[in-house]
Length: 394
Image (cartoon, rainbow, N blue to C red; front, side, top):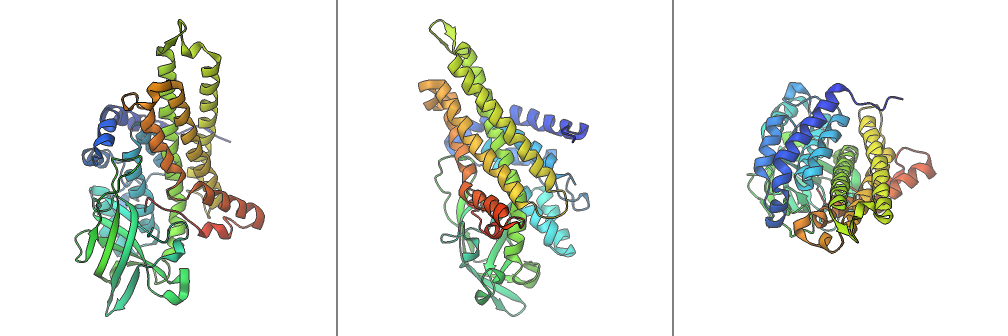
């Protein structure tokens, strides 16, 4: 077994860290406080090749593997989890779905745009369809050589800011989940509108909003795959998305450990730095141990995403552990800071707010446990529970 990173992967991780610490970390707290969308940072991510990383080079992407993407995403999240989730949704569930399932002419039309500066969003979740993604009510009615879309999407990352939307709607209600189809929409299409950004607990610099479909006309060339393929494509794509959220969570956990170690060396009580107290040392040791376990499970899941077949249960294990470790590490960072951990100026409370969403989007912790248990009990990859997803990020 080889646990080492290649020279290229190490260089990429270091480049992502250098950029994130120099350009994202200094403004992350201000962007969070003001709810400011990080457009300038995203433009830099495109310049540096971090957007569209796994898209084949023939379409303008980096042609990199999923582990490389996880390494970069971890470092971006270590500085700013809000920017990281925008990058994650764009790269995984948007670019991945188009790369894997779109026709050649569709790839040629959309992927270069996504790699050059057009942001992508993934519109699956609805007000009454979260964990049960098969309960969609948005509909696409056949009209001539195209479709007319009606309905509403909720909790969509980058809604209103993104230029392209991979959106799911029901084309045949009688077929249930097999009647859901996927479409690609442009932001300027008549009938497509957006709600005001939601006031969120964390990742406040990323926009999360509703999408409204009021008679949006799309041609059949905007449908990805065949009618009824949408649900299957969504589930397959979410494996990559969950690895991305796991990497985001690892980045937040690392930031929490960094902050806790630094503060414990500076803060003095009873005449000594609190880092000399065993109670603090035990907390730091537990944080480091849990973080390393989450990191390597995430790296393994990313590697598996480039291997043949579906690896849904393995991905769920990584997403589950990493998200829960992120919350624990961030909470311990607040505790180590004492009362100061509750203040915005010290940074720990932002990490705790940012960490908390990783247990919810692209599959809640409860859903991940169902997926893992189904795999164990039914002996099939992912089991039937793999068809249950929660995607507040889209």
